Image (cartoon, rainbow, N blue to C red):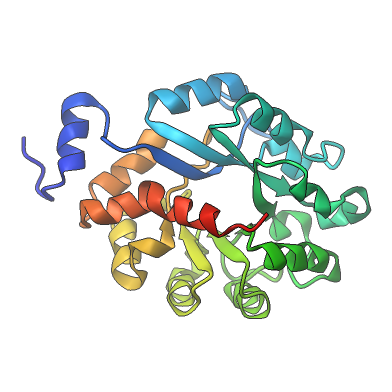
Length: 267
């Protein structure tokens, strides 16, 4: 059956299970996590399956680097060493243990693209002084900063993201999950600020969300993210393939935006 949206990518996927371009997944995790059960979580197996499903690269922060203060990003560095052409890393930072981190270590491994932090999980507002050295370094080098955003949070609301974007205009700021509880506000912020990006991770499951974002801010500001291994990459892929957008928009979402971001990094 010919797809109604006339996407050549969708046609090919329905015929072969593949699309003709590689995909960069900008929001992934690896390995086990407390409190839940992953069907696949060991990173070697997860990466193998990701490659089979058409991913040509991932930006990753392993669960341990986000929740285990003793990890100190050892797992992501192991992954980047083993898969240097496939894995790029976020340097995980928990401000409650800030004295344990040397944020300059983000410069020591070529695979790092920037930082990731979870203010809601850490119960530490994003404007806490312990973040500021990290932000200053990211601003100097145009690094990526991925911050979980849900909306209506005392720790990292959309308004807090605007403050970061204003104060540190060179940070390439990804609003993780695109603040679904304040989606219209996060879309407006991405439209107003050239250094703010929307993230499809988890929110891609909402009907019509991809077209809504693209129509509002342009496909150049929307990043493909799956939360792998929480979601199968094909789930998010389907939301983009069936969206009422063009294949040129899909190119931006699948890989061109991530390539453009990495080219801006100065380290």
